[in-house]
Amino acid sequence: MNKNKNGLIQDVVIIAASVAVAIILARTDILTNVLTSSQKLELAGSFIAGLFFTSIFTVAPAAVTLGEIAQANSVILTALFGALGAVAGDLIIFKFMRDRFSGHLMKLIKTGNHGKRLMVLFKLRSFRWLTFFAGGFIIASPLPDELGIALLGFFKLKTSLFVPLSFTFNFLGICLIGIAASLF
Image (cartoon, rainbow, N blue to C red; front, side, top):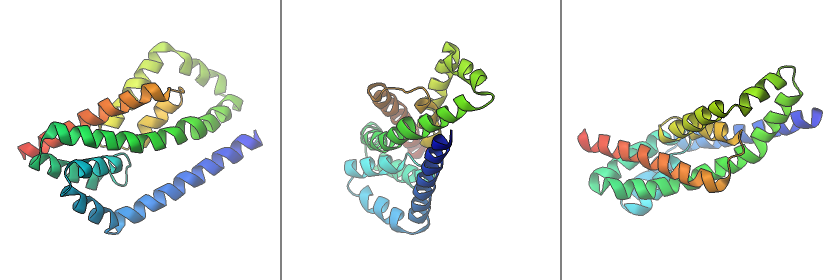
């Protein structure tokens, strides 16, 4: 039990450090400068903006950049390369969430008083499908991908299934951003 708490504390510290770095990038002009300069590169810019489309702290400037690139170019190509970048960013988060954070959290839940009840809920097929679609919806939306990935990480989703799921939902989300940017 103590080892699981230490692992969970270590995970929370890593997440906090990541959040701090993301806040620094978002509050300084570093991220804006990178995204603005990458707009001129079109497809590479879409990939870079897609990479930043995955985090709560960088999603707003990335979405604006993707919208501007989509206005000047093909919405489909922007979404294609943006989704590839988003998958790269999501994979980093997914590996951490699935392998470390959710594992430590599940061990902590299993050893708690209400752990058996929660484990029964996690094993229900309908709960798994609902969680799968909720995670995918969160990934497609401007909501933080970390939440959707954490939901998928609880069920030890294989990377071979996660990559096409992440690509599809990010592609759809970026297409919607590109279409909205073209209309307004």
